[in-house]
Length: 214
View 1 (tube, rainbow, N blue to C red):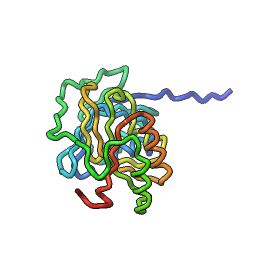
View 2 (spheres, rainbow, N blue to C red):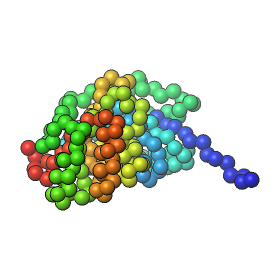
View 3 (cartoon, rainbow, N blue to C red):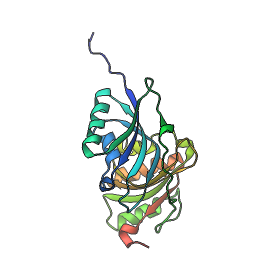
């Protein structure tokens, strides 16, 4: 009989402030791929094409040592950990710092319409030689507030995901809106869109990088 003890997963809640210079980098995606964590975004405010700081309330779950390493990674980047609470030991104090309201509301844009039937647009994207990068806007319905939808795009489908814009109010008040930059192979991208479709989440494919801004 092996004497090796299984390590009980830990959970940490953290509110992070991401400096504008790191917006082009898939920081949250790396927490999943590098440290094998499950990351659920509980609230978010990030404005596209600005140097202002982005805000995320995160629930991080995984191996305790990897959790520690991931927080050290964030601090090494200069990402401020404004609040930190260990689940079942310290209650998160989310009310002690008001989460900023976004000054804008994300809305559908680009050449594609709101669709769950995205196959035609996807085939068009492939025909234009876009085989590595796909931009889209995703509406995460408030009924999925407790599910790490974006984290699964990394862990289950092997994608690199950069969040370029986000608005998700805390406490399940409204649907969340995310502008995502997805990097991966065509099959991975196709499978990830099938996953989002299965969940019933609205998707807008963004072809502005192909056709130019409209």
